[in-house]
Length: 137
Ligand SMILES: NC(=O)c1ccc[n+]([C@@H]2O[C@H](COP(=O)([O-])OP(=O)(O)OC[C@H]3O[C@@H](n4cnc5c(N)ncnc54)[C@H](OP(=O)(O)O)[C@@H]3O)[C@@H](O)[C@H]2O)c1
Image (tube, rainbow, N blue to C red; front, side, top):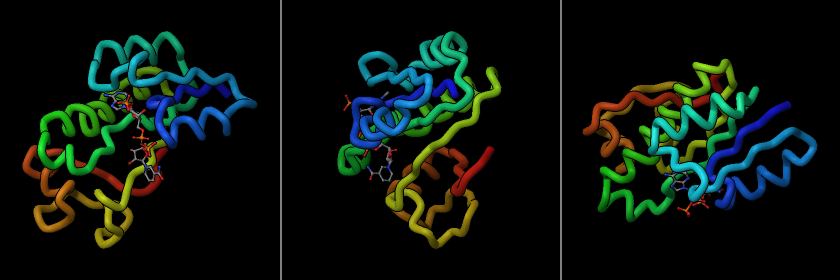
């Protein structure tokens, strides 16, 4: 299977690269692909044409995200949107590992952002983004 991994230099991305050694894998670090750059993401995905994208690129500094919500939104919300857009263009499946800092398990399998949940969700809600938990295809 042809697999594209974003955020390959991080903790999860590094382990994913090891886990996918039996596959035709293209691994991109932050320096190689900034997921906040829509044009770059779409160009990479259409060039690689993966069957699956494991999206591990994220700004994970939770305190930093609280103090710089614009950067957090660009990377974690828009970046993920760009990956999803590219996947839609090419027919790839997307695997995205969320975190209990955003989804604390109280909202069920799938839920809209509400103003009454975790700080990260409240920040997202202020920017009007919709989110979904659980696995999708
Ligand atoms: N590790 C876990 O146990 C765990 C558990 C649950 C969920 N997750 C989720 O898995 C994802 C990755 O977590 P992690 O633990 O691997 O975090 P991490 O070690 O901080 O890795 C994140 C990687 O994303 C890169 N990155 C940052 N901004 C980027 C951008 N704009 N474009 C592309 N790449 C960018 C970082 O590169 P730089 O450092 O060079 O900026 C880093 O290599 C996150 O969504 C996290 O919430 C992880």
